Amino acid sequence: MIIVLKAGASDEDIQRVVEKLKEFNYGAHISRGENRVVIGAIGEKRMEEKILIMEQISSLPFVEQVIPILSPYKLVTKEFNPSGTKIRISPDVEIGNDQIVVMAGPCAVESKEQLFEIAEFVKEVGAKVLRGGAFKPRTSPYSFQGLGIEGLKLLYEAKQKYGLPVITEVMDPRDLEIVAEYADVIQIGARNMQNFTLLKEVGKLRKPVLLKRGISATLEEFLFAAEYIMVGGNSEVILCERGIRTFSDYSRNTLDLTIVPALKHKTHLPVFVDPSHGTGNFRYVPSMAKAAIAAGADGLIIEVHPHPEKALSDGPQSLTFSDFRRLMNELKSIADAIGRRL
Ligand code: PEP
Ligand code: MN
Image (cartoon, rainbow, N blue to C red; front, top):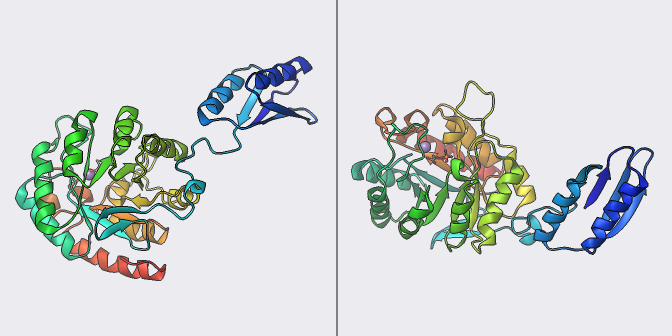
C-alpha cells in the first residue's frame, strides 16, 4: 500500500507511520516530494490484516490517503482464474463459454397455465433457462408478492415437463433451503446484493448463483458481494447488470453497459445483463439486449409474458412472444458477428 501524508506533515508524523508499519512487520520506503511525503509499505500480509492496517493508518490525522496496490478482493479477480469461469447449469447448458445463454420467462410465476405456456414457447425459440419469481421483492407491500412455495413447485414441474433448468430469486435466508431444492440457479436480487447474511448462506451452497448488481452499487461493491459468496466456498457466481438508479427520466433504470467490459477486465466470472429491469420498457429491451451481447455479455435474463397487459408484475417491460422470437433471431446475428453462438 501507499500512504500519502497531508501537506506539512512533520518528521514526527512520518516517524509515527513508520512505527505503525513496523508494528505489523512492514518495512517503509519514504519518498519526500516538494510538498508531500509518500510512504510505501513493504511486506506481504493476509487480506484480513491488510484491511485492518489500512483502516488504522487512515485514522491517523496527518494521513491524506491510503492506496492499496493490489485489489482488495482476491477470489473474484482475473488472476485467480485467467481462463475464465465456466458454470454448468445442466448437462447441456454451460455459462461462460462461447455460447450466449438466454434465460427467459415471466417476472412472476402466476399460475400453472401461464408458466407452462411461457416455458414451452421460450424453449422453442432457444432460451436455455426458464426464469420465474416465486418470492417477489415488490416496492409496494400492496403489489403481488408471488406464489411462494407453490411457485417453486410449478417451476420444478415446468422444468420436468420442458427440460429447462430454472432460476428463481431467494430473498430470505430462511427460504434458502427450499429454494435450493427446487431451483437450478439461485437469484440474488438487486435489493439484496448487500444482504451479507444471505450472501454468506448462499456461499455455503454448491449451486450456481446469479448475483444482480445493487441499485446504486459501485463495481467494487458488486465484486465484494461476489467475494462474500466465493469465500464461503461457492465459486459458481454469475454477475448480472440490471440497471442502476440515475437521473434518467425516460427509463426505469440506467443500464450500465460499460460495466460489462469493466467486469470482464477485472474478474473471471461470467457476466449477464438484464435489459428488462435495466430499461423498464418493452420498447427498449431488444436494443439493449443486442447491445449487451455486442458488449461481451455471456448471456441475458429477459422477462416474457404472453399478455403483458394482464401480467401481475412488470408487464410494461415484458416482451410478447412475437417480440421475443424476433429478438432471439436478431441475437443470433450479433453472436455470429462476434464469434459466439446462441
Ligand atoms: C426480477 O428479476 O424480477 C427482479 C426483481 O430483479 P431485480 O432484483 O434486478 O430488481
Ligand atoms: Mn421483474
